[in-house]
Each structure stands twice: as structure tokens, then as C-alpha cells.
Image (tube, rainbow, N blue to C red; front, side, top):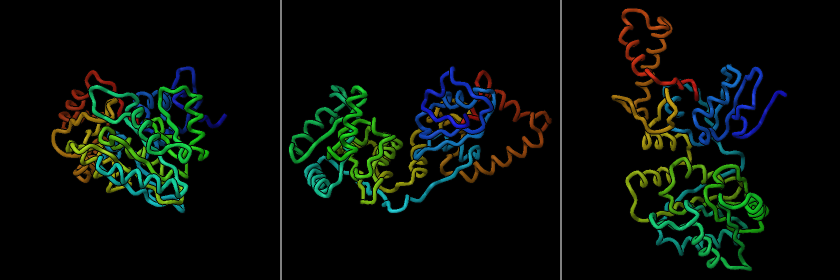
Length: 328
């Protein structure tokens, strides 16, 4: 066997490799650092690694800025596809949005509506999936409209049946949680409505938006929020409206959440730079990296007297820690 294709199951100890040469990880943001390390260190060899994602994790983006990862960016849409139009709307637009949905269905299109919750929460004032599903069924009644519902607590057979109804075009609207974030491909679905969009991170918003725009027709992503938004939430909404560029979105995400710990396993946060900003100071970081590489090329073990301080600082920083810096 030359190729092995699988899910997270490939990480299990009972799966062993012989002379593993290349690891390709799709949807990299769904794997933790330790999971990725375990996958490609199974036979004590460090293979070539290609990680793919529409929304790089802050830690991964930081590694590209530091120069520890080479990048290839696919910045062109497949032939015949159009950029997705993204709009941010408030509750006052609800009636107009319902009319827009009916217009799209009349044109033969299908619609996703995504909620952050399954059941009503007494602590968080959000529209939830169950109440939303009931409201959609009232606004889009049988026999003119058909609505599917999918969430993580459904039995697999029921979930698959609902997905097949939507994929075949039998149902017009799919009400769902983030279980549809990846792996769903319905080219005829041209509208993504994300309820309580302020509750989602940029990575999730961009992934959800990617469920539409897979056909030749113009697609839309509508971000529904309340009026009271934090500064960070406003920045997330404006970023989504402004760009479809996953790397640009990832840069904003890194600015909001922090770059993570390159030598450790945290994939966001842990902003441990004494000075500087990875997003703004990329040119300075590149100069510093070039200097560091020259230093290591001349003195790999930092034993020269002039490098004693650097050696002490490095040993102090890594004291008592595992080094995960080679895990992309």
C-alpha cells in the first residue's frame, strides 16, 4: 500500500507506518498540535508535511511569518464561480431577509440557516435552533416549502437522511448547527444565513461561508447579529464583509486571539513577545530570522563566547518544556 487516506482514526496507536514520506492534512484547523505530531512521528521519521486550510490557525500563520513554513496560496476561484457577497444585518432586516429568501427559492436556489445553539439557554439570549426551526416552518409552510434540520445530537442515520433530502433538492432550506462547517457540498445552495453571528469566531464564519459559492450562480452570506456588539465582534463582522481572502481573515484572527505558542501546543493566545506585533512587524521578524539562521549556521550549539547570552536565554525559555516547534 502506497497511499492511506483516513480521518482522525489514523492517529490511533494501532495504525503504524513504514517509511512514511509525506503527510497531507486537510482542514488542518480541526487537528491539535499533539495530534499532528503524533501522526507524523509514528515511525520516528519526520516526513514532508503539507497542511491545508481555508483559515490558518493563528499559530500556523505565525510560523509562516517567522519563516518556519513555506506557503502556497490558491487565490483564484474555480472556473465559472463568482465571489460570495457577504452582508451584515440586524434584526430590523428580518422581514426583508425573509422576502429575499423566498425570491431565491423561486429561482430554484437552496438556503442554509446556521445557529450556534441546539436548545434554549437561560444564560445567553440567543435565537436557538429549535425556536428558529419552528419560525422558519411558519414563514415557509408546506406544501410550497420544505425544511430540513440537522444537528450534532441527531442519530447518524437521521442526519444522513436529512442531508440527502437537501443535497437532492427535495428540501429548500437546511436549518443546522456547525455540523455543516466542513464536508458539505451542495452547488445549488446559494445562500448562507448565520444567526447570532457575533457568537462565532472568524475561522468558523469563513468556513461556514465556504459552504455556498460552489455553483455558477451568485451566492450570498448574511451575518445576522444583535445591535449590541463588542469591539472585537464589530471587527469580525466588518472583516467578513470586506474580504473573502482566508489569509487576510487569519491575520485579523491572529491579531484578535494572539499567535499561539510556536514552541508549545497552544494554537492561539500566548502573546509572549516583549515588543513587536507579528502582523505589523513582519519585515522586522524576517530580518531577525535571517540573523538567527546565520548565527545557528556559524554556531549550531551556541557554544561560542559571544553567543553565551543567547544560549542562556534559550535554555531558560525551554526549561521544563517539550519542544513542539517543528510541528506545523
